[in-house]
Amino acid sequence: MGEMNRPWVSQYPPEIPKEIEISERSLQSFLKDVAEEFPEKVAIHFLGKKLTYKELYEQSLKLANYLSGLGVSKGDRVAIMLPNCPQAVIGYYGVLLAGGIVVQTNPLYTERELEYQLNDSGAEVIVSLDILYPRVSKVKALTKLRHVIVTGIKDYLPFPKNLLYPFVQKKEYGIVVKVEHSGDNHLFTEIMNRTAAKQLNVEVNPKEDLALLQYTGGTTGFPKGVMLTHHNLVSNTEMCVKWMYNCKRAEEVVLGVLPFFHVYGMTTVMNLSVMQAFEMVLVPKFDATTMLKLIQKYKPTLFPGAPTIYIALLNHPDIEKYDLSSIDSCISGSAPLPVEVQEQFEKVTGGKLVEGYGLTESSPVTHANFLWGERVSGSVGLPWPNTDAAILSMETGERAEVGEIGEIAVKGPQVMKGYWNKPEETEAILKDGWLLTGDLGYMDDRGYFYVVDRKKDMIIASGFNIYPREIEEVLYEHPKVQEVVVAGIPDPYRGETVKAYIVKKAGTEMTEDELDQYARKHLAAYKVPKIYEFRDELPKTAVGKILRRSLVEEEKERIAK
Image (cartoon, rainbow, N blue to C red):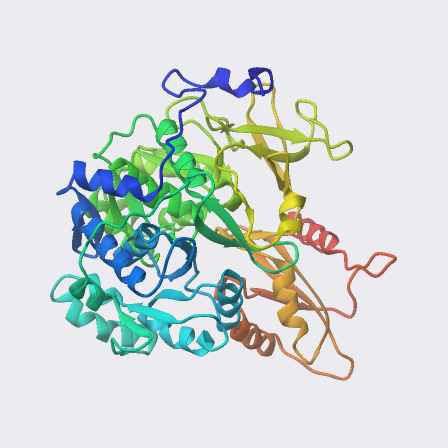
């Protein structure tokens, strides 16, 4: 496709190439190179603990060797269920070094959600946080899981924090888990103490071999495993390097609050840092006060985030007491970035905050505004190098006219191979290499893209993708629910929030609290509806289909009054 269909490249500053040469290599090879080039460079700061790139690589090799000893070979899936901590990075690269495929698993998953993902991926090994071990144990017999590798936050804390942490954990979570290193249970600390860091020779075909199964929801309500190859992830990270051309190799400090079990945090924090020998300041759990202290102490220069994170910091009552001037560059994703948030955050930090766009299926970034050039408020920016994008007419499916609203489609080396074991759903979304995003938008005459709505019914609340059908299926199982529809309604803090509209079965009584407690047993906390509304009936089409969109419009009209 020629430049005639890429008006955006004429907007690029001279520092950003129109096309880049993508490295034909495995993702894990970058860690090996950086460890050899910068062995004593700090890779990770974690609650007072430091890990160099040499240590990170050696510990990843140790895990790879141990996994190999457990029978993990090329193409086998290994689940990682961890917050942002050193073990999450070691686990990720350790699986890749063993030839395995990483299955990122959200620590917030309930037993039901975990069981589904483990069965769908076929993972036989999981690396889990200790406080999640009881949850994993309950589903183990219902899945193909054979081995559980257990680690805790305390394992990578400096003295005396490592001794005190179990007491903090018990107070916060009401649980202290003790697991023996025997049988099917394996302790991360023992693996590090007992295993040699030998090189493993695993042949990788970057364009064909998967590095990652990243689960995302779908219009069916069942999560799908997005198959991302080494080439997909390497290409998106190298595009990121070129886009952030003022960032200096081995000199930047990245604030890692975006979870690595989400593809956005994985690419823009973890993989970017490893490729460029940046320091990562890892944050296992978001807390505004803790974040402000970390920024003042470690002076991060890069801060990828989501609007809710920036909003929470800006609304902190003591923000003026902290020095945030180290922050130079931030790309916001996951949800629309309000202009006032952008402007206020830049005023407070003196750095740049711009909006980007992408999907799990595209590793994830496809568009962004310039950090050090012109940016257009309200736009998600321009396509990245090597990336084609188009607006497809809703009527004809052909390219839409400039300014015409249609479906956004993207094409590039970062676009997924397909959905795991779902050929029909893959065919529906991938057309001749083009990824149909399901998002509606338009392009202006200079190539800037704007997202105006979503074709799908997905809800984005605080950066989390939430699918109404999944919640509806859970609520329909309640014996007193006759009909239910779930929708995302505008929320000034979360972007959107989840609302459930309920019709009770005749002759039954039910409270919001009763339904809420039921939902919390079966859904991760971020999916649980924040608002319940009981109705006598729900709006429907002539054939009986519930009109979700009309309920959303109702809410918008109510808010506008």
